[in-house]
Image 1 (cartoon, helix red, strand yellow):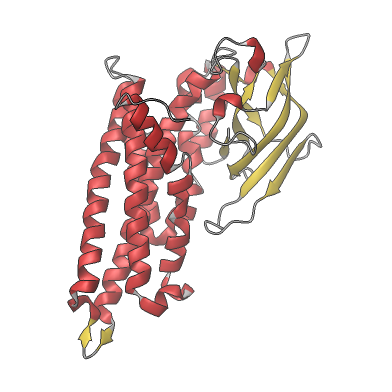
Image 2 (cartoon, helix red, strand yellow):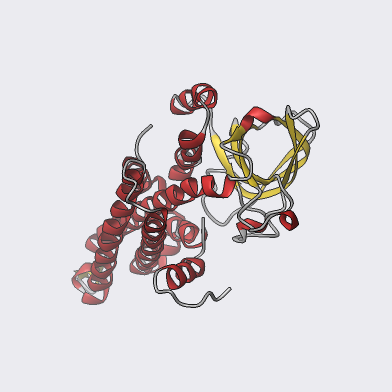
Length: 338
């Protein structure tokens, strides 16, 4: 499998090609969702799953977010109860904003295997699974969510009602799922940062081209500093965010080989990159729309689509505010605010 640094640049390129977030999100779960499996999966799990994903025969999705817990992952409600024989688990609960679930063959699922009231710390008792998505099973239901942007890919609510899965779908040790899933979460932040960069650059390219072609008062509008300077400023923001993103992705890759690189350092870098890239993309997309004037509101010029899509990396997979909370507490050693 490619490293996260290569995958980040690949997804940036896809988004920048004009495909935007929708194009990149059609495949990005195959990269970040499989990171925990690649690191902690058994030989059998790897041999039966990873090759088919790499070949494009299977798609995968990430089953973490829930409607009633949101970013409070440690208190998620979906449960996986082990049978008396130990051969199966029964999954019950609900997930939301699960991208590509309609077309996925596998889901990397995080569920609680030990009740919250029975563990010493909320991070304990969560387990990770690589499960089949059997759409013919009446105990599994998928419902599409209508979205503002990124409509080329499906987002879903997923309902489990005593959905039975084999015990050998467990990834790593039971109860250690939260530690395992961090590998997927940090990878996801890097990939979303790359996609945001691609979207921002695509928007700027459209804006610069229009500014050279659009003539008002007998001169191209790009001659006006009121048009040129905001675009130049947005470009420099993207370039700075790109450096942060590539650094984070390379640090993530190196952490698997260098024990001196802590998960704390990786988390700080990946969260910072995602925040900076999302903000830079938002600035670029907003200025691209404004540079087009009235035509920025027209579908034919694409920039309205980029603007709708640029909200995704600001919201997901973690909000701007929670990243600021994380940096405040974990880097600056300030009191926790939530």
